[in-house]
Length: 69
Image (cartoon, rainbow, N blue to C red; front, side, top):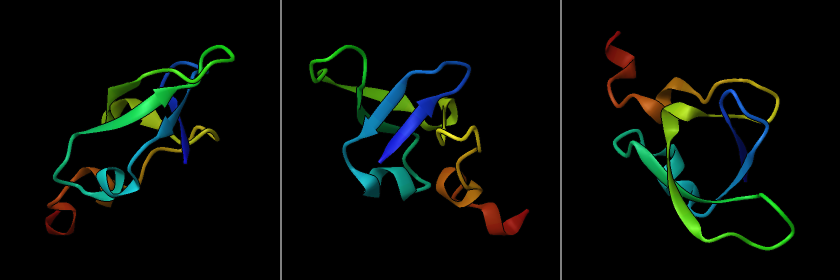
């Protein structure tokens, strides 16, 4: 799955989807898609990622207590 870094046009290939959908994990591991070669895996804060369309990530992926609000 590809996500975009907020306020940038850089794409990130998410390595582990389970990390992404787990609301108790605040960072995910991904590979920045700069250049033609595959980049090394790096950590990205979920709060800084959006879908390529610009839409925010679902709240249930970010907040473990989303049902209590």
